[in-house]
Structures are given as C-alpha cells and as structure tokens.
Length: 317
Image (cartoon, rainbow, N blue to C red; front, side):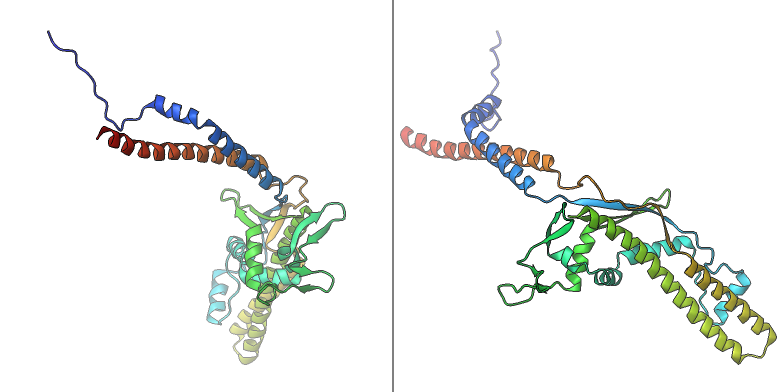
C-alpha cells in the first residue's frame, strides 16, 4: 500500500495568515500613520491658495492681403530681391504660436504691462477689493522697491525669472482637426487671468501686424529705389505691380484688428477655481500614510524576527 505523500512548503513561502496576523498586531501603527498623513494632507490642501484659469478660443484669421500674386510676378519679385511675405495663413499661425511662447515676446509683454510684481511678489488676491495681497518680505509697495535677501542681494527678478514664471502659467494648445488655438493663463486672480489672456491675444495680433507692415514698407522703399534706377518699361511695370501689392498688404494689415487670431470665444473671469484639487490631495496623503504604516509594521516584524532566530540558536546550543 502506497504511503501518503506529504507536501513540504519552502520556508520562504508567503503565509497569508501570518501576514494578516502581523498587520493586525500592528494595526495601531497603521491607523496612527494614516491619521497623521490624512491630517497633514488636509492641512496642506486647505493652505494652498485657489488658482483660477481663464482661456480664449481663437481661430486663424483669413488674411486676404498675404501677397497672393501670380507665379510669374512672384518669380520676378524673387529676382528683384524682394520677399513678398509668401507663407499662407497656416504658416503665419504657426509662427504666431511660437512667437507667443518666445522669450523675447514674453519679456516685452511683461515689461509693457508691469507684471513683475503680480508674478513674483503676489501671495493672494483680495476678492472684495480686487487687489493683490503682496508679500512684503519680497516687495515693499510703499516705496516700490524690491527687498534685500540675507546675502545683501536684491530680490528683484531678472527677465529670465519673469519669463520662467510666466511660462509656468501660460498654456497654448491647438486642435489638429479644427485648427483652433486655445490660449490660457493660470493666476491667483480670476480678473488677472482674464485680463492677461485678452492682452496676450491683442499683443500677438499687434506684434505680427507690425512686423508684416514693417517688412512690406521696407519692400516698398526697396522697390521704389529700384524703380528710379531702371529705364526699362517692362521692369518698371513689374515694380509698379509689386509696389501696389505691398501697399495693399500694408492697408489691409492696418485695417484688421484681429490680424492673425480671430477670437471665437473670449476669455472671461472664472467663477470656479481650477486648482488645487483639495479632495484629491487629502485622499493621496491618506493612502500614502496607510501604505507607509503597513511598510513600517512589516519592517518592525522583520527586525524582530531577525533578533529571535539568533536567540533560538543560542538556546539550542
């Protein structure tokens, strides 16, 4: 008759009953960690200021004066050394989006609208008076000067600091299917968020218009100079047509208020915060506390088991 087989389990196999027993013995440690982390998470979440986000939906403007000339005239313009703007509306939109995020444009934007103090010294927004609450350890509003740090250096931010801070608040995204562009700004102030988005859209339109007008006027000056230098009737006719085209570009550019981006849905002052997600912060902190408590219980059990084994070996001898 065959002997019954016995199953031998390796010593390192996980015993679920032992695991649950270990967790039960350390339940107060787990509870303590969970409560402490939950309280810390709630305290942290409640002390975070509200962040508001305003956004505007934009559509690429259809520029009719974008140097739409015949291939023959375009070729002659190239031979004459004149760049007539080329590039359709799509290319101009891409250029405008990249310009909007560029360091040079943002530096000029921040300086023009005096945003250094709201960006770097504001710590809250008073909803009642609609005024910034400034950190006077950073900026003194009475004399309009930046404070000095412990090393004796001024806390006045550099252009690099300002652009870095503003880029963290700025969002520029586009819909590949529709071509629509969304420009958004996050701020402690819902009013400032709306105003900054509006100013960004206005300034990028003005920047691109001014740039195109300057290029067209430079082309006109160049063509007029070439016109005075030639006596060939055919070339004079070409130059007249080129000058007419560039003049038309200048006139249409000056007539268009929304030169590159046309506002489809303007920015409004948000009534609800976008950040912080206080409930999520509290939940994550509670879960982290529970996991850390479990880890601590297992670590204590492991240390104790390591001490017990040498004692048993000593008694056996």
